[in-house]
Amino acid sequence: MVYNLNEKATSAPEETNILFDYVINEDTIAILPGLHTDYDVVVLERDQKLFVRKPALHIIQESCLEYGVSYDGLKKAVKYHTSFRQKLPIPVSIAKDVYMFPTHATTNHLCGWLSLRHITQIFPTHKPTRNSTSTWVRLADGKKLTIQQSYHTMTEQLSRAVYYRTLMIQKHA
Image 1: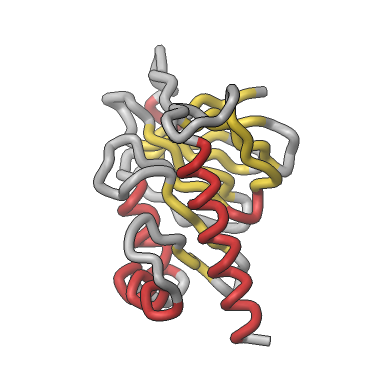
Image 2 (image 1 turned 135 degrees about the vertical axis):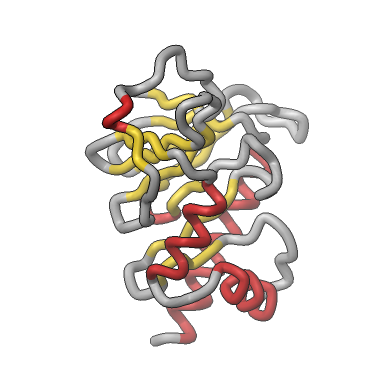
């Protein structure tokens, strides 16, 4: 199965299937822009797809608070420990090994968030160039996710998340 990040939904889920809140957890694979008037994002989990009427960044921010830290504090910590300044990986819960990273700038309406723990490989949809516009992400369950972002950018984002996770493991060992 292939999920397409920027595929516009043709129909809305039933009203009862739309959530107003969501907390990121170990099963969260991705938070993708919904591109629909009835919901803001589609959340992919291991065994289900959820439709949430809340922007991805708000879900990230509120999930951080649920785990006892602020999004702004985490951004500050990532900047402190690295040379990264934008499109920062966010350790939503270090204790639960939940690290999320954005696909685009967080102000971009196409920005989705991917969970590091569920990604096994990133590869170009065609011969990679700096101007390539889409990337495949292979997930741990064998499915693929198509992201409308360059292979170069997605590789950089994945590398940053891996680097920061490794840094945190070393500091807390």
